[in-house]
Image 1: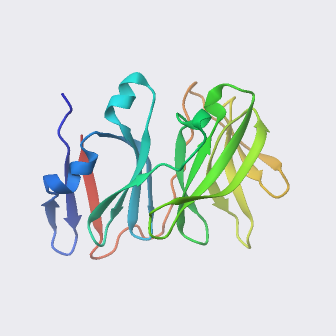
Image 2 (image 1 turned 60 degrees about the vertical axis):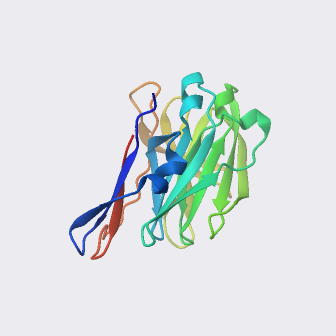
Length: 212
């Protein structure tokens, strides 16, 4: 039996919670949240979810959930239209520097080949469809591309995790890798990127929580 889902919104100005109604959460009743995929852009919080039944057979069918903090409205966004060979491919939500747009990295590295291709998809401002911005690859022994580092003056590098769990920065223009000296010690685990903001909350800010 599928566990029930509950969600609530906290408003700092009134120091109170509003529990979301069942009809507001209805679209998510059969969805499983991947907790480490959260990203927030321009007051909209995003998560990657998959169909609950697909998790049991490990043939995942993904979507993206968006929660508009100001309007307190949930939206279920379809996964990009990708080739059939990538139907089970995992993605990472990433904030694009300077233009404040949410993007999705999708990689075919799961197929077990020594080379991989990595597609960057950008969500439209209305949150209705994805557009492929670029493809990086083929790259050798690269597990995934999963974030940007804005080094200033238009110098943007891409965080890359190699199959040997080493973390590099990749320059898409020069195709050069910079070794950060970091390596994940736990076999099978991935690096995660968390964006730092000097001011995380302000008066009137909302947050949402889910329990499934």
